Length: 238
Length: 267
Image 1 (cartoon, rainbow over the protein chains, first blue to last red):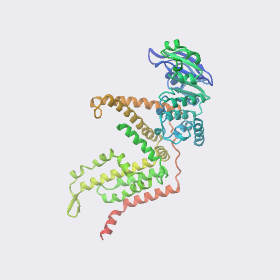
Image 2: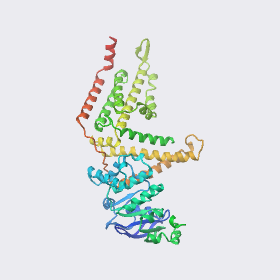
Image 3: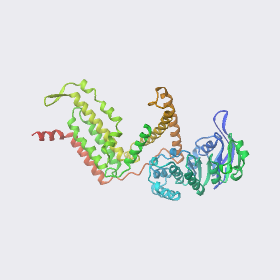
Image 4: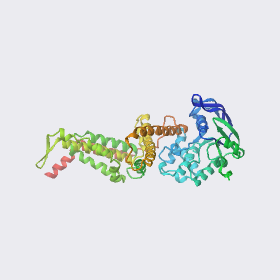
């Protein structure tokens, strides 16, 4: 479903952020994109969403990420930002959730029906008419995920979905991610969360793919992780 | 809570006020918008010495405060920064215009004093009318109504996003102010030497956040066309409200009601 072929990118000449990155994610896969700060994780996401453009070929369902295809690509990919405050800009949760569908010409009635469905699926029905500035951080993160699900994306991309959450809300988000049937690409430093939600891990280091394989192998490989400025998940550190 | 957080809280309170339900809140945004515009035009059109003509127009905001369940205190509290500026507009009139205009008993009142009071009253009434519109109409409905009135979509989107970005900038300012005060204990305000870097940082941070917000909009299919909240239908009740208000404003503008009433009482 998602293809990266020899993708390179640099913000400044002679300081490449990504070098010759290639990977392929199949439909329905849950992939964790991990790496130390500055490894290029966010850049991969931005390139995939067409917010940046680099060299090489990036495609979603065979459709190349190019300016003329962005609307189609963005319809397929739902992106949950790290900072939910930046994702929620409408006055109420309901209006925020309807923002995407309405832009894709779904009627207001259908959009509201979808909003009800998604809120019920996530157990957030009581948030529907709440004002965005009046809900807690945990509720906001869940609502941000709901805004993306209301668009019925084929793949969900998440940037640090468990950051700044208390243990209870973190567990809630993990359970929601696990329940999603869509293809998932998740960047995070929370390797325990990646262990719980992803079957495959891509480790980025210095702008290159340092490892790509089953989460059960990579996340238990202390030597590999430490070599790339990472640590074993907390559950294996005893 | 620092000053910026308070400002942010107050912004949220305006949204809460607008989301309430009352006979005024439930009316079509278009009717309220047109009435407010008509009211402001009427107020502004009075001659600078026509203080008595303006006085009956005070009744309209009073009525809206009552019907909308909006506390008058809240209005004056929220307008506390702008009101003194508006009040200051005519302060120099008594100096430049000293010719007596009327006599209160044996006391001569100069044209400057009357025009100052008129200007002040005009300013206060216009601000109150704008506040009442914002306090009884959510910003999205207001923008939707502007679109139905054929105001260009770029202008309307600009208005809506400016309203949103005020919150974003205030949030950033609140974080920066907290960070500053935690490392400058006992200092009042921000030292003048830090103003430049403070403003520069604020601009950069706000731009970063604004860019991320815009990216979030683009990723959800935004394409220069904002889908506003559905416009409440313009009902017969709204038409009647608009007609009555316009009629009363026209009456108060062209018939010296206050002078006639005063004359009748004196007789």
